[in-house]
Image 1: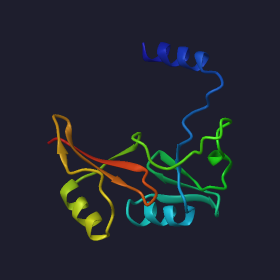
Image 2: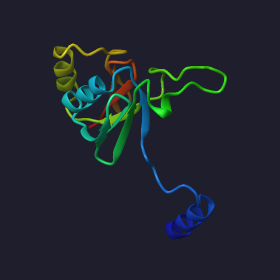
Image 3: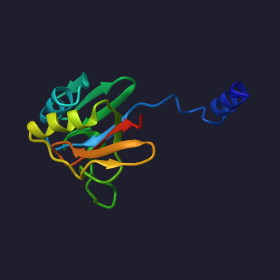
Image 4: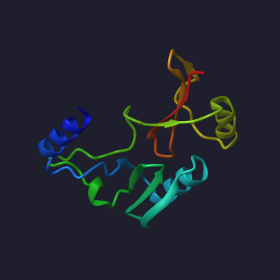
Length: 140
């Protein structure tokens, strides 16, 4: 059955080759690279400063687009593409309270307090441009 679903998916999405990444708009690409690599543990994959860089963690890639990047240009109606919003990357972490303590010592900004639910605990932080990142720890 899984093979049938897979072949249908390949046929139905012939133009989609795979997941490339998540784009976050940032004001300063070099500063964003430092944030993601030094505080969150991402690895720098590529950078073309000051326009764009990509960082990865496991199989996930975040594309950090500065104001000069082609992926940051205004929409046809003139609306700017800006950092922030509520969609977010969710990172699976361990020892969430310990990580929160470490991030608070580094002076990072939190959007909320630690929340607990049936699946686990989570909290949201912001990168230096206001893009949200959810830190999630599975329930034991």
